[in-house]
Length: 194
Image (spheres, rainbow, N blue to C red):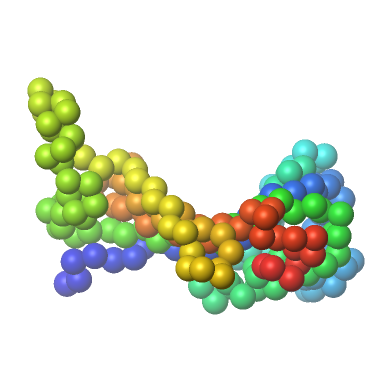
């Protein structure tokens, strides 16, 4: 039996900018050739289409658009390229979006079969002793959430934000990576930098 399993995975692209949720409803995607009508007929699930929020799922791709953010996500690794292409296509059509930040994100939820292995990950990333020295009367100290920011090598724009957090149940850990670009790197033609 394996000691750890990756149980859940999701990738997403987050664009921070200026969007029109009511205009960018599913029919807008069809009208502009971003998704085929057959996909809409076969697998569209609309949560809401409103002036402040459009949210729908189509063929295991979630789309969420607010006035200042667009998120494209999928739990299928094979759809990573699809959400990337969809983001590029949207940006090519919505030139006035004024994208100020972009995040390429992936998270994995790991389940540890042995609680001691689960604790060892937290102890390795955040040793308990320094915290027990600060709060010696505490009966328990442990990692709940940690984020590290890594500057990319010279010549590569943006930063990596790496996260580790415990989920609500014992023996679960979420590892996340955010490949972040802000306005300094996006330039005037954001579509070419995704």
